[in-house]
Length: 395
Image 1 (cartoon, rainbow, N blue to C red):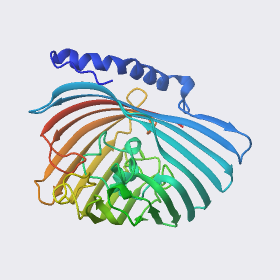
Image 2 (image 1 turned 120 degrees about the vertical axis):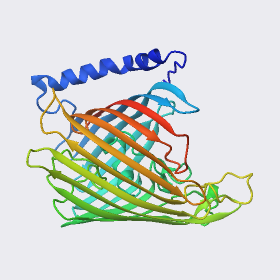
Image 3 (image 1 turned 60 degrees about the horizontal axis):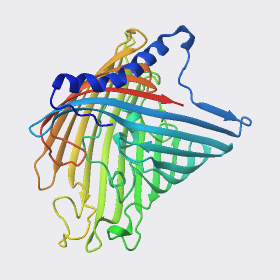
């Protein structure tokens, strides 16, 4: 939708928000209604019997943002994300998922299309287009994040066009939970031969996690979350992630390897007053032989050249125990620093408050971010941004 009113700062702030206001009022009213004491945001479920069923749901993230930098002084209302969730079960051990995504201005794309062979909690196999095992921010996704924008640090290769789509790639992942230990092991197509991977080397990925307190549930089975809002008790989880692909960077004229690893920790604790405090931190290093700074000698061919260097983040939040209207307030902060090889470092800090109505299904967010870090990993313009967001999910 992308509405800009640079001539008048008042209208540039107010008018785009009028699109979101009716939605905000409606869902707050819906949540506060006595008839909706349960879950008003259930998706559609069609059941043949307890074994065979089909479920349809969706997700929507709307935002209005005002930015100020030496090159950008604008406001806009946009669709941050719009998703369709389709899942089903054909047999007690066989399920499937098809999920789509649409960004502002982009066409609808299929991000997940997979068969799920789920035998028991400790041994499961997913085959098709699915999420590559990654660090916690990569597995959280936008709908299970504490902050509104967690993507101000470089992401592994499957998040870049040419090697994947929003962290997904075609392949297989074997995963499970054994007591306090959780594992993900996968092999994927990764970078295509259009960029020099003529031998079709696979992208290998693994994530190993250990739960010191309660075993952390995973929203998409092996996906993660940046906050459980206290619903899962006290949690302390540490994890390490690896990704590697020979000929995973470069171009048809010159190829290079990719290797990355990450370490992250997540803690959520219920305090005596029933408030919920959570903390997260992570460090990631990416080694791309051919990258944004060190490119192939032949500049005439397109290069899959991504970030090379290290990055880390830290987050903290507190969910107040007392409701304010139908929801609870959750102030938080997130700090990100990116340190690329051969280029200057960058950092961004985001301060915000979530208004949690139905967990990750219905929430509002207001945040202020300042800095020059972004998902490329390389410093941009130092920008001040104020964002108001609405998140809805039906499932």
